[in-house]
Image (cartoon, rainbow over all chains, first blue to last red; front, side, top):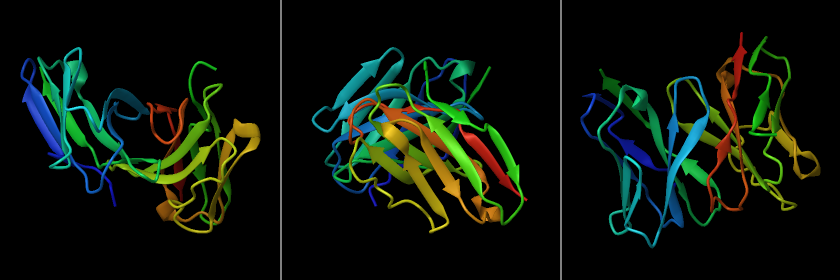
Length: 110
Length: 115
């Protein structure tokens, strides 16, 4: 399976600190995407990084991709209480469907 | 519409009954996905529709599950003879591009509880 696996499963930090979440996958990919899910809601797309890209930024988000290690990381800088949510990576490979990992539950303590 | 719409938002049913869940994707989106999410878990892929191509049904957990997409727009996920293990949130998503090349837009989900 090319399913992504996030690490850690849960992360609790103080407001203002940086949060780093990791994602590993098993097979070659076309792109990797990160999504956010607030409790009881649908998922919201955060950022997409293509297999030929190594790093991408969007506001306080920084995503890296290492295809040799089949891994990606999501960094949220200067965290806020509103960043509390679950974060999922999703991969797209030859099967042309988006496959999600189990997610990281991030808690930002005020 | 402005976003992906799912109905019902909540459904409570008795074991053995059939249920239908509906998804209205964003107008013009050719790709439509159904996922299932159990409490506190990740998303389990169920089925993927892309334009007029045959759907990818590889994620459907049993023959009690089926889905159709009429006219390339609205989709219905049907679960026959529901079981307690079918209890979950069923999420629908649509995309303007095919094959996961672009972002998915998710609905708020249909929470199914089988008693």
